[in-house]
Length: 369
Image (cartoon, rainbow, N blue to C red; front, side):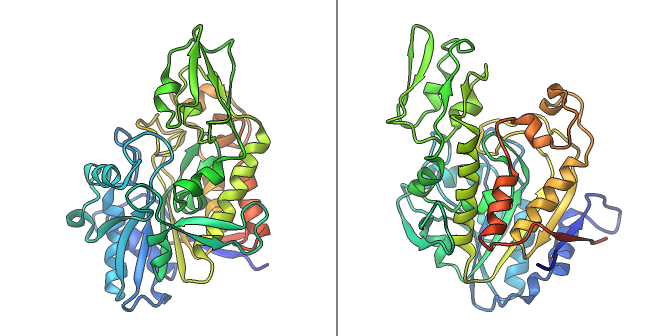
């Protein structure tokens, strides 16, 4: 298979330019203007950030993409689907409040916010997955599938279940409705190391399904209620909540790849990753830890698999930032994401995505200055 072209620009600026201008130049060089946007609805999938988290992408970047789509004759909207867990984005009203709180309003971005799976996360469509091994019909937020063109604008960072969250995570998990997210998470259900557990109750507060109880100062997870969303893993201050197995995370990654294919197959799509504020965990957290590596830059491609691999490679070439979670891991390997979340294997997602024909892991990196 021919190498995919991935375009890159760093975060350096001078008196004659700025970061929004650099992003605009990047996506134009990458060929976004070759898409026919004329009178077409364009869904721009983005993570608005959980309230309290400050690592999410600033709305200024979204405005660049929105303005570009409008200049090319399209009708843009920003979108995401509701979450499976308790938080600021669990229904459309709270979700839009969170988006506005974090600066994503029509006044700052130039377009409207539409929560793709409706008020309660139930408005979805079932999309057959071509070549799917784990998912035969993906449950995708309806507004995402109603669009004529799909654009992913993702914050590239670490993730406690998938290794990192980039383009494919933004698409596959992000565009799944509530039942779609449950389907993707269902392969893995966490357990509790009682030797480490102190019964603080943080996991019970974050669980949306009343699956966790505290008895004799120890947490227990009822797998009949648990949907495997993994929020308890990230919230536990003692690292007492652990994934069920490494295989479960691999299956999750494969399902994310298959959901991503369901979203983009059969229509024009374009992908952008911003490798900045590389926090160790997802923007779904109501907080963000210190970045694990320096800011790298902005990447764009027509191939989502090559894009994620290029970003992962770029991050793994970066020095470890002192005082970060990665620095505390004292690892000497070449996989920063595996060092932060040892039970994960990010390659399982891109390898499966390549296998099912979503893209290629082989890429040519083209720098835009």
